[in-house]
Every structure is written in C-alpha cells, then in structure tokens.
Length: 255
Image (cartoon, rainbow, N blue to C red; front, side, top):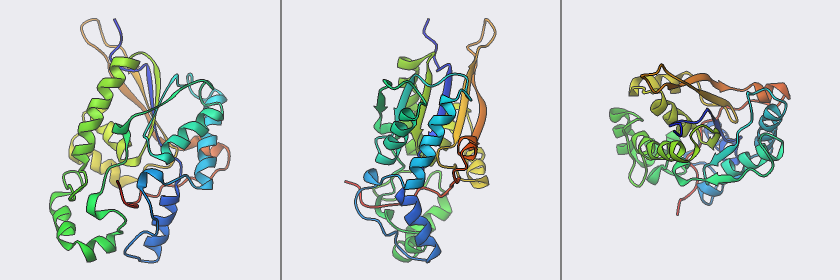
C-alpha cells in the first residue's frame, strides 16, 4: 500500500530576492510604495539569494541530511524556481531531478495592496488597514487578493497531490514565507492563534530548512508527520553566507 505522506519532507523558503531588498529600503526610507515594477512572479533572486541557494545545495550534497530529496516541487515564481535550480546544480539532489512547478505554491496574493508599504496602505486604503486590524491577518482578504485561509485552502489540495503521487518519497518544497507557515498549520493541525504566534516570533529565513519525517504508528494507527526542526539556517552559516529574514514584499502588479 502506498504511504499517505512522504518519508521525509523539507520545506524551504526561496533565497533573498530583489523584492526583499527593495522592501527593506522602502521601509527604512519610510516610503509609501516599494520601488519595483513588473509582476511579482518575475522578481529574481539577489546575488546574496543565489549564494544562499548554493549553500543549501552544498549542505545536502555533503551528507548533512538523511538522504537528498528525490522529488523537487517549486512555486512558479522566478525566485523560487531559481532557488530550486541552484540548489540542484550545487548537488543538493541528483542532477537529473525534474523541478516540478505547482501554482498552488505561489506567493499569497495582495490584490489592491500590491506594492504598498504599511505607510502606503494606511494612506491610500485606510479602510483596509482598519479592516485588517479588526479581522487579523489570518482572515483579512484585500480586494483582489487572498487571506491566509485562501492560501491554506489551496495548500490542502497540494498536500493531497503530494500524498497521491509522492507518498514514501523524499520531497523538497521551495516556496514562500506564508506558504511555509501555512503548511505547518495544516500538517500539525494548528489553530489560528498557534500559527500566528510562530509568525510573530521570527520571520522565516531565506533558504532555511523546515523538516518533517514520517513516523509509523502502531498496527491500528496510521502514524504521523513529525516536525524535526523549523527555520534552520545551518547551511548558510556553514559557508559564512549572511542569513536574511526580510518578509516577502507586496511587489509589482499581477496579471
């Protein structure tokens, strides 16, 4: 019988992107808008982000994990695709491993709030700032965008596909900060309060590792996915590569 879950599951946030850098600059300068144009899907890695992705690949290639992934899933956003490619090319998984793109792993969509900093949202859409304060980030859905619940809905379907096609495999997912947190919410059966408490503690670092392993149950139980570690940055530290934790920006127009 095919297992319901992967033998091992690694969830990785993409390397630092040009959007992360622009967001940080906009907040430091207290600007209303992040100075990037074009689609969020096309925002590339920064030079540091490329180094982070290679460091992650070297870490797996050197045998620091219990086996390398044999399934590589990625958000279709360029920064995630390039992280997966650089990871593979650095020896993180076999060179012939196909990078499987799945649109359900895309970044949370921000709708009319695209491109705005917190200052910009309060200035241009004060009603949305007030609504978010009332509903909280878990349930607030900006016009044309998504709430965390919307992201969770598509990720539940994604995990069904992973179980159907990759049960018993060693799977790596390369995606985005909110995706990492929402996958934790689903896999561990969390509440809204629990996942938001984790979110408040610390941002998910670029190219950090969140890892689960399948633990078989007794004869009358299915077993469960067990969290091995969360937000681990050892691969970057091993190569003296700076660790970055900037939240993903609301960048560019989507179309």
